[in-house]
Length: 616
Image (tube, rainbow, N blue to C red; front, side):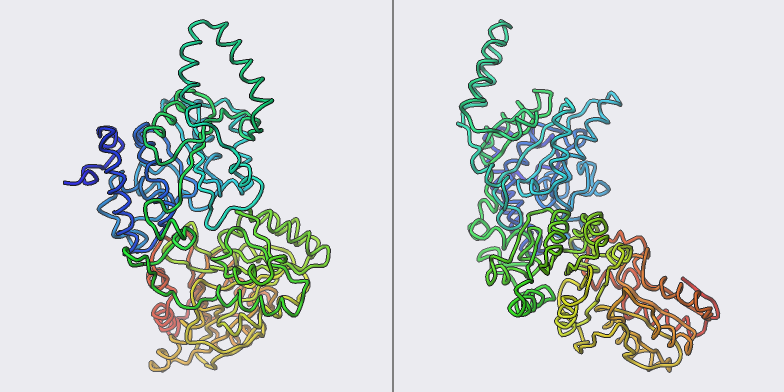
């Protein structure tokens, strides 16, 4: 029986001897590589935190103590050793375990964590709740150095330092986020190095000298005076946090001792831990960005199955093409050059490419400053991450009507990353931004022409497109509304790649003798929906399948337009994703299970064709 097979809780980790821990870590790495090779997932970040996670479970009990990861893609080891090892074959699969911490999955998961820079704020909230309630548990946050490019992390650090709350913040420093870190904090962390024995000596000296209080007080003041004049400035100490480290993040003895020291200080402590992303796997160490989030691969060679060409790849290609014609065009990413397809732009036009780190709000406002001075900024960003810049969309972009192009990637269902990453809210929140135009290409050809059009429009404009590639619809039509297929029995209104589901459904409905008219929207905002209303005046029945949440969906806007025009419908049904909290699974599975695929359209159309009731 392997050591790993005996581990199902923090208590099991504590029961091991220190001599058994290196073998456990080796088994964990081998298990993670073999498991992620089958399912896909986040590999390099988890391999880098194996020893750190084991050490944390040696010190804390995660059934009681609160361990908060930031971001959750470094939590696989934690999940494996807290009773979910046998479920790892279902990782990120429909009905299986999540790739991120999920409190309703296990009591050991303290907080959901799919977006960066949140852990310190959440941990401080829990620490304050503990104090107010007179409870007895410890709170520890694990935050990556990449997450320190996000402003929320500094809000949390500043407040935590001033709080006096017993709280441990583990800075997992691997000099990487998804790609290589950028900015001043990255340079500061590279310079922040102390001699290995410093913290051990400090603990020993405090224990010895504190027996005679005046000696400890005097030597402590001398030490602080010398440190302030000799050692480099430490931003964490300057904030008021008790800084420890750096500590070798792959030395279990050092890690466990340092974490115990940090916990026992009973104050806000930042423990700086140095790790290697991809540790123990040669191809992941050599290419940690490639194996950050990865599809199924060969566990021996690391060879990854080809994912095919997607909208993100084509976005980068088209943006380079237009930038060659217009030197005012600049590109911005928030630590996602690879994911958004803008790596080619960075290579071709490095002086016009700006990676701001995990700082979406800053990216929007910086783009606004660029636009105010005559540049044409293009911010390529995931839909779920642009949510973090909503205030800036209104205050810094919309109020002045500045021309910024937002390339909203991963719009709609993204699949295996689950509810933290599904891009289901952008139609609602972009529709609330004054003067925002929103274009929805349904094919690569439309992406090219809509991007070209967006670069010429005044004011803020978003081009939203899904993860993955195009479907059966490969035509190009950039009109706000287009009748793709004429019919007389009902009107199907769609946009983006949902047009493929609508076309498939219309073909099947025709075999049933139901004639469906398809109206495709190329621009959802602004739009008076005149073509939709003309079609509905004829058919009197609306079916609106959308890969978005219900709030702010286009179907409701069309119903509002019908009411304004006093156009009475005999039947209507809006097929969407409700509150938008959709778990992980493939896009095909989720469309089917939540009733927005071609099968659902056919069923709804058949029901509506014989219905005299309005249903929404």
